[in-house]
Length: 165
Image (cartoon, rainbow, N blue to C red; front, side):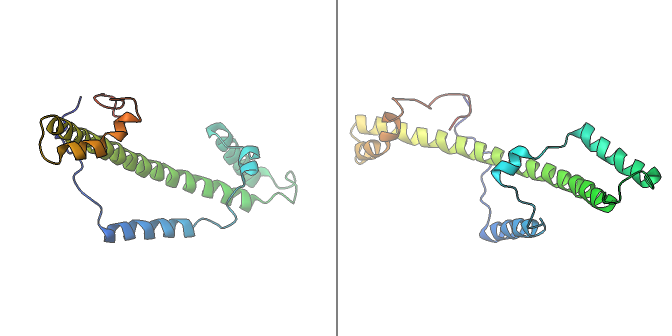
């Protein structure tokens, strides 16, 4: 069990910084083409591309650019294929960065949630003990906090080392 007094992330993000973060997301979203949204049916029916298929598409583009005259149908648009592959690579790099940001915020949420819950457990225990020995206001506070544990079946979620909150 971790030390309930530990507070690894004892900060808040200022309103100004939240506004900057939200503006950055707005900027990012404004750079994604409006027609680049799929329906649920399209998401399930469009082929995803893995590394070997991406390499194949790049090889096909290179081959068509080098030796495709007279071989490739005129309706094949190599510029579109090149643009698609470039945007795919750019998007892949951005998604990797977004995944990193998402994981960092998920970690912050896990840490702060864990720390908040551990502190709340200590407060609850203090009210419970205080109520039992007659400290003024302790019993009322205990009774206000107690339903959280009653609906969980006693001490469910308390005293574990698995970081669940």
